[in-house]
Image (tube, rainbow, N blue to C red):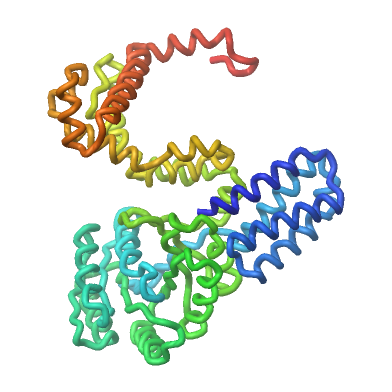
Length: 452
């Protein structure tokens, strides 16, 4: 997400940072570039106009022109205005009501509502320790109820069974009664996709909203529809008392125009952004972190949170102890490392949050391909337990068998074995106090202030 915007703004800001002095002319040139970058990212025109006007006004102020490093001061102004457009601070779900707290999901067909209900249910259960129930009021799509039932089983939350022949409002009222009986904390209500111009369907969701009186009414929208996402959200906001927006499919959106437009056009905060199909691929929307990501400064806080939440700490400690004792780093360990990386959204997602990642050469970005990890895991899975433990026994005929079993080439198997050998060598150096020796060896060669 924001790839094209980040690249375009990155080069503009790089030129600015080198300026010893800012004038009206080079601020004007910079703002022209920023405007073009925002329009190409499909940001809504009123949002672009407001953002540029604010940056121009503050950029020509004394705090920037009089600064010791005016280029960096203007970058801060751009950063602050991006945050202001997206909504200053993260806004969590408001669940402070008599249980069950009801959350109603609305949106167009195919926006990803049902998948988002599953993701949100998992997040509430695992992070907020809530007892969650989900119910489908989509009586028009035959597979909708079954899909939600499958997702509920996958994430381990309660599912309230509904029937395609019932009225959505009747289903919802029965679900609320069941949630009260089972002492449920949060009830997530999935609804049918509808167009804002479909009067009958909009009347139905208004009736559903009135019957439920939810504490949160979230509009789920596909971020790839760009500024149209903001316009659709506004149309739904006129019909329903929306409390927030969830942007989905952000992994397929290189522009990010929707994220910059939604708040100002609708007046409603973006509460979550979803990426990918996995049930854990939903994160809170933090305007300050997103602005930092857009300007190529990374998002280290989110990266640390993701590692803390998704890395298996027990496995990590076992591996650390194993290496410390000088035991061999085998193929099972390598597979664990790759699976943990994929759990965190893959290398592309991690790179997105790393400072300066936008400036990496295209050749390096092309190599950061998650399909490589899947291929490597498939190769390791095609090995016998003995081969995984003792990779040295894998010779010619075994390599051919492993390649055939994993649907890869012998060259791929050779490459994996070579990478494993290099990692194993590095791990040996770190075992038995090796890391301390390496640090002592570096001590005399470190610049001042970097001693150990």
